[in-house]
Image: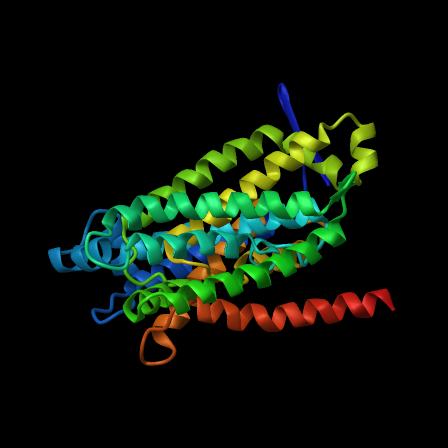
Length: 347
């Protein structure tokens, strides 16, 4: 860590973390430009950049701006939100296994959103209001309720982080069973539409899916900037943080709400994209060689993972598959490896 003073303002920073964050942002930008040029009407990166700068002919502008831009921006925003949400959750729990999808927060948002689809008719005609208003609101409410329930069930005077993970895993299994029951109880068309959404896909995303996620990122970023001064104290443990005067309960509550809202808004936008919130903070922490994942680096890594996964989903198989399948293929083995590493460390 190094100390930097700029007049009245001063802060600590980690050079390796900042360098890796910058490198990940550059990589994300490169992949994003490449993804904008790939499709039935291919464009090279120079042509894509020309269109984004205001040039290009009418056809090129239509392809990039009207057909591909919204989807690619949604992927970046969703990935950043998931990476940031996972980093916050892992910092609160001080456990690499703690992420919104593993703890059941994503599943809670999914339960509420699927309930709107099944009982509100969003999969059928006249479901525009439910799709753009009802589902996002229900997902955020479901995620918040699940996060609060997991937090309360983990308390015995104070929150036990190991118990938090166990309660979250159990709650995740219960909520998954609830979703399965709702799908089995509804008609085939609604169940099929909900099932496709539940895999997590960027297909068909428009700017209407971008604004809620982008707005939530901005709001949560402002909240995190407000409480960032107390975050290093949390790494010392509850007792040490309280001894240093950090308002521990308020900070943990604010961080949990921010994490849940970020995870829930991504579910409402593209469905539950698995393992990004888990993998992104762990990769960024290992690249920077730090104990606790950096929030900025995790957000950038999440954006990169989703962007690369979407590119693979579109190009690798001859037909397009949901991006959630690719992220699960990446995240599943990583989870097994992390469990093996933790078991090996404890021996």
